[in-house]
Image 1 (cartoon, rainbow, N blue to C red):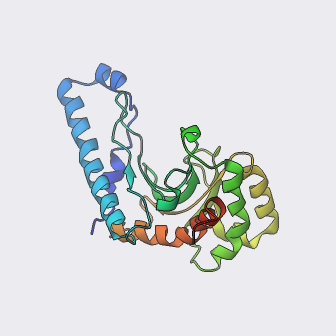
Image 2: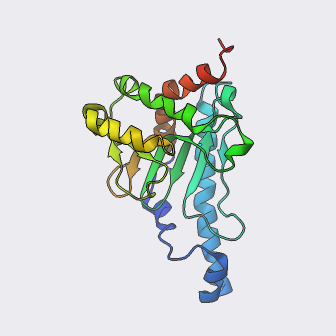
Length: 225
């Protein structure tokens, strides 16, 4: 059981993430110390997600992908992991888990990065929008939000409650989201929401998202029973 702490958010309060620029303004010792702080939080992050993956139903999901704490040239300004249903392991849709300076979020998404190397189109994925109102009947919508790919990471997104209760908001959002793709997830905000068990928080949201995510399995793999 791992608590989400302020110290995990603090590392992302950096003014600069480029190694080149960091080295211009800090001593080698300071750079080494900064790297160690980032890596220490990432090690916790990696273990949390590996534990979550081990607790999901056997065979339901492919191996979790935990993005590295650096891309070689920069420190990450967030940590990210992705979960894919085993039957959709080669498709662009996935459940993402991200920690940044503002929040922990678990969300359904279409991964546009290197999408040409995987299967599935944004239009096919966006058909899930029609399923959201019915799916939402089975969850507590508190801290759930929707946004489209082009919204900035730290923008205030539309609440799921507003989406399902306002036909106008729903139609406008769907119209905008279909130009790119939509994201749907639950947030734990820094300084507002206490998460004493990250593993349980992440796995519970994944389980809630799975019925909606599985709708794609029947669309893509019609021979799967």
